Image (cartoon, helix red, strand yellow):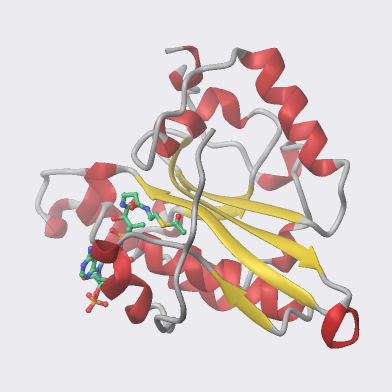
Length: 201
Ligand code: ACO
């Protein structure tokens, strides 16, 4: 699959064309992506034999215009079908999101050794007329690479998205999920409220 083409070394924020400013991501969440957690995830080598320098710390950052090559669609396919539209169409979609400032916030967690994406999530800000021209944050498309699940990456993504939503002035942040994910979102500080209706075309 073209979207999983491996790039060999980690690319810093400064060399990337990002969807939004990385300053909007919580420093607490950035710091909480501890290198030890990452090392435990990525290798069968005993922890005592592993380096734990900060270079190994996974990075959370906004989606970048070149993330098609870092497995963005592969990670999303953990959640639902994410067929490959090709690099040009993917980039066009990225540019369409960025053309609506202060609306789409998609962030990724990147494995520093491989420069591949291991977690994704989005918060979309809806502008309402009621409640004094209020804002509502909609959390969407949360996915963590299967090999990385259970190690708090999903929690960090939700914390970072909630921080963006609340700091943007949203009076509430909401999401839809399956019954089996309710305990996960409760661990993230969310509570069950009302019901979801859907109609598929
Ligand atoms: N049931 C019970 N508890 C859970 C579950 C679950 N299904 N998933 C996570 N938890 C708990 C963890 O045990 C942990 O608890 P702890 O703090 O007591 O140790 C806490 O929730 C945080 O879990 P994380 O390790 O951060 O979860 P993870 O990184 O695996 O991410 C996620 C969770 C995103 C659901 C991941 O498993 C995944 O990608 N699943 C497949 C795709 C999916 O279902 N995405 C969500 C769709 S809903 C939406 O997008 C709005």
